[in-house]
Amino acid sequence: MSDPKTPFEQMMAMGQEWAKAVSPALENFTPKGFESMMPTMPAELMEQFMGKGLSPDGLDAKTRLLLTLTGLTIQGAQAEAQIRITVRHLVEAGATKQEIAETIAQAAMFGGVPAMSKAMELATEVLDTPQEGES
Image 1 (cartoon, helix red, strand yellow):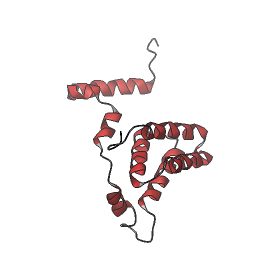
Image 2 (cartoon, rainbow, N blue to C red):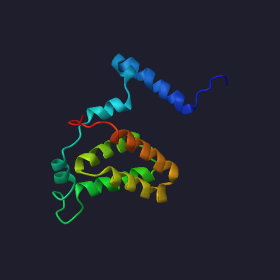
Image 3 (cartoon, rainbow, N blue to C red):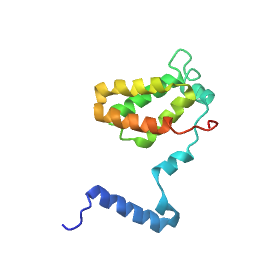
């Protein structure tokens, strides 16, 4: 056993070799590159499809996204791209940094401190990045 790679590392290496064989352009693919291809949905559209437009007496889009962030955090904050995308949409929906931080902190009760710490890192990464239209 001279190969120090874990089974996961071996699987990833095989996947990268396969992707390179299919298309040389995929050699440099990263999940963050994929995230940047997904535009942030405008707040009005989110409200129409995920909030009061969907259910006038129900939750608004911001609250639904905060609940989504809670669930992603409780699951161990393993879905990094989904957390970053959710935080990006929360900002667009009008959530404050304080609301986002409190939502993640509350999830520590159910998901544990390591999950909360990871989710906070991911959220901070998004919140510290200037959004379109900001300088």
